[in-house]
Amino acid sequence: MSIVMKPSATKDEIDAVIQKIKSSGLRADVSSGEYQTVIGIVGDEKKVDFDQVKSMGGVFDAIRIQVPYRLISRSYIPDDVVVKVGSIAIGKDNPPVYMAGPCSKCVRRHPSPPCQFCRGGAFKPRTSVHSFQGLGVEGLEHLESVGKDLGMPTVTEIRSEVDVELVARHTDVLQIGARNMFNQDLIEAAARTGKPIFFKRGFSAQIDEYLSFAERIVANGNRNVLLCERGIMPLGGSFKLQTRFTLDLNAVPVLRKETPFPVIADPSHGTGRRDLVLPMSRAAIASGAHGLMIEVHDRPQEALSDGAQAVLPQELKKIINVSDLVFKTIRDSDSPFSSDIRNGTARA
Image (cartoon, rainbow, N blue to C red):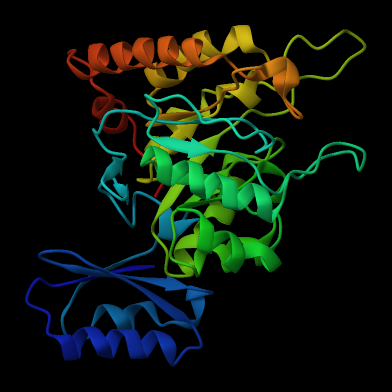
């Protein structure tokens, strides 16, 4: 349920609606705009009498939202959300942002600008116990040092809720990876830090599942959400797989229609192949992605994880130049990205 208050609603009237929600054992998500306040309900809204709420003082309307991820749906937040990290604005009509660096912080080399974010994994979720697990705290401290040297905000993955406070002290954006998309405790602990959450879609997750778990970030009072399409499982069979995953670019415009939060694409994990990162980066930006996460390494043959998908620094520069050109061409055309949202109605 979305409760829209009148522009003239007083603080007492707004507080009365919030108290009505809390008295039913539920939580209120309050969005105060310049002219109007909208209140969402966190929990089983069937416990609240719809007609009673609608007739309360200061209430303009009460709307039932049918999608399961109502707190992050466009029915609840119609306007694009811009997530700010320092001076960098992500989302809406802002130019694409680029997050680049090695998969693991395994070497003391700096990523090459012109990316805006430095990324690297200090705690690595790996399929095999025999694979490189990351440098842990040492890698975290090194990533922080590199970010300061370059004047860039940093992004790194949290593997467990036990590490949330530690990682939050050293990095600017907290990443929840595909393997942890369903980890409710980790999601909620990370959300409560208030830091931007870079939330990757699980490689077997449906869009509704993905957004339902992303909603937990907002339900814990954090609207600094960056969604990420990083590739889904390819079709099985006895043949040799040509790509590591399938970068689901259908998801980018779908997510933009369904939710107002920025959408980032990861063509490195989505393909697993260095030679495919450029064409899929172009395609991702053309589909409406607000930015890219790209693995880069100056000696990929020495990388301790995912070297096959890491591009060289000079290749990164070309990818960014081409992607910026694609963005500007579509932005200045007769069919800019915003028209994709207008020309399709998100589910109510």
